[in-house]
Length: 194
Image (cartoon, rainbow, N blue to C red; front, side, top):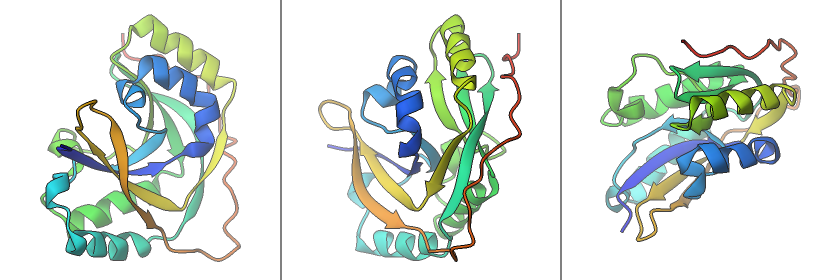
């Protein structure tokens, strides 16, 4: 029985580049979570998600226009988590802010962090040398252009502890003038704190 849920923006365009690293370095990938940027996690217990919840999320998320972005930089949380940063990050923060405003009981990462930092995790908890090697290799393949056009509600907790998509919410549509962000402001990957 599923006991955990999360709202994510899938970044399937990045799978070809980051998939092999994530399968080795990110435990969530081995449990079925696609490359993604988190909107809110943890979210409601799956057993508590009803039609009213889905309707509210549909309304909240539908007010944010679909948008283009690029994974253009590499970042670190301490020495144990490395990630790709989206540019621009603002629309992801807006998604999180809107969901938290509508569902104030569910704050990002249980309120553990003061600031929302949109990111696509490449590796977490693996040996530091393996994470650094992955960032050096990934740097040569950036930027990765992508488009956010939907949010997935994912659940975790069956007998195999695998992530499953429960529902898909479409973002609103933006006029055709919205062009992909190419993320040309690339820098060498920063090393994590020593």
